[in-house]
Length: 232
Figure 1: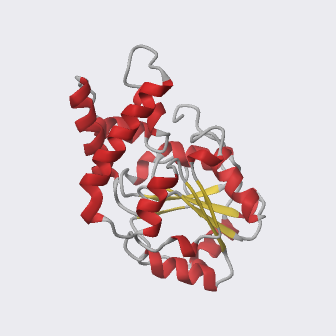
Figure 2: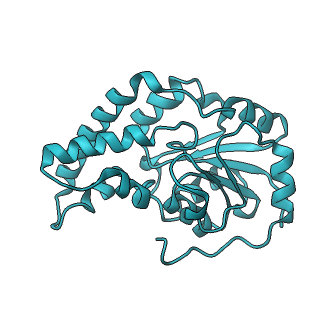
């Protein structure tokens, strides 16, 4: 296995534990729209995809993109209101990012969120300064589970995919990492360890994780798994 040179993080569910608030916001929107969809179950399957694509999946008919964007904006307002006083980094995150930078690793962020949502989290928590590259939904053609998000982060970091390690809390995000030819760490803020396909390591938070430990695991790992067709 090539040496580890870069760490790439998803945002929702990895930097922060916000999935319950996200699910509640979707559920309130569904109630307004007269839909009976269970938001928690939906996000277990589709978390990581752009909000407009998640929303389209709950309708039995094609919804105009303009309307989907309006629904997504309404959901975003609900989410920000619900999560306003809960914003905080996942346990041990800041210390881990500091240690990773001190260890000479490059650090990138790849998320399906857009600019205002990135600012709502990264700037409020003063996390942006830890990332060499930040890639959001406006920077790629196709979101997760496609490879674009993580491939663009690696390209901007100037690091080959074989030298990158992705942190993900979602099944579709893990699949995006494998499609980008990158190994993946599973973060169990939303899913259980057995829900993931083949992560390098499973963590609940960053409290006990060190760059040295990751380098050991990365060096001993086999080839990056092929994406699981049933998972995507």
